[in-house]
Image 1 (spheres, each protein chain N blue to C red):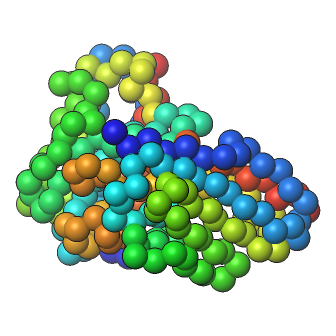
Image 2: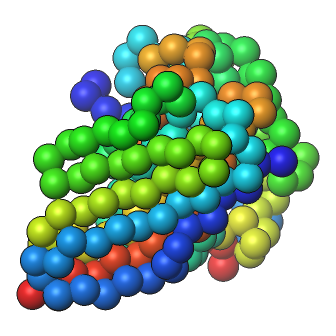
Image 3: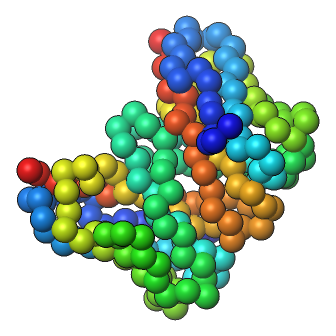
Length: 111
Length: 115
């Protein structure tokens, strides 16, 4: 059974810092890995999708890497801003046709 | 529509009441998923549709939960005889293909509170 963990559970940084969020998964036989952002009381917004054949994806200040063999992905956020404050979730497809999510990292960027 | 739409956004139900939650996926999307998210946790899979076929309902927590997508578009998640432990945010997602290498798009969710 696929299990996904995320470290740290919560993170508080001053504005302008570069930061790294970590995601680990137990079964490396994945099609892809997707990073999402969730604001309080809202749904999930897709940030980046990395296919299993890729090693990284970039979108603006976000960069996500994928190492299937070690079962890990990192989300790098450059020059963090208060507007980046949210919960960040990673998800991988599991057996069948559904996603398994990690518990999320709650990020606070202080002005 | 431009995105996945869910209604209602908020629902308060008395224990024992039946509720119905609606999901309008992105037009033309083949795959539709329902997830349950408890406070402070990641979403947990409930069920999956490919067009009108419910291919996986392994995540439904009990036989009080029922989902349908009769015409392969709009989906309804029904919870009968609601219990307090059903209180959660219910998220719907859709993707354009049946394959798992496509991006999933989520709605805003329905926050269900059972009192």
